[in-house]
Image (cartoon, rainbow, N blue to C red; front, side, top):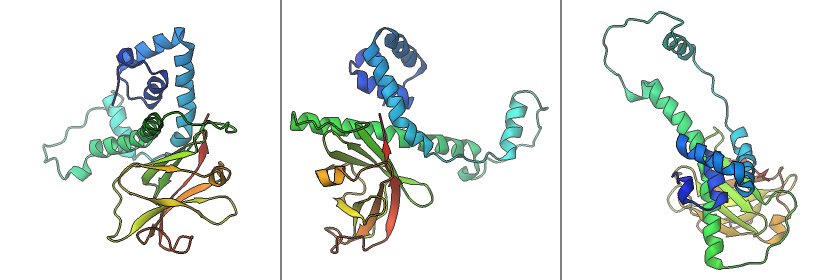
Length: 252
């Protein structure tokens, strides 16, 4: 996913790569040196760090087992090495290394989807050509991580307020019953859900939002996904189970 800074002239994408942490040490250092003399690049880095901050705030802290701290102390030399008899590796799901990798990978994947969303929006804009730009109050984007009740992210949504466009990107491959569809809803505070449309659960989806929907977007609004008949809810309100929700966040 990493793109060397010297071969990528787009300061916005370079700033996103830096904020997401997908560059290696040499590329990060090269980008930091370039930003010292390039105010446009520096502004892009700071802008992306602010955009991704709300997503990082949604990551739930995990309690670290005592045995992990003991292992750290032993590796640092504060405790004598433990001698244990040779034993089989055991099932892969008992491996601390595997779960450490899965935990870190899930966090990075959630943040990386924000970059995917913006790239998809950019490609859509380039294909469509110039469009009128409306001035939006506050930040130019809003984002939401749409997750199951247990905290597992299923989709991320990014709204370009200036273009009245939304991109929804899957974080996993959700299981949807045969003959059913996923429908996206906006729930403004104190109001009934507003249907945004049916979308494929396992592929990026682009939606044009009417002005009435843009006017209801706020940091207190929530996105929700329900399981509906093909073509969407016949009543204009969710009729099937709501499988995931996520609060909207403004970005700079």
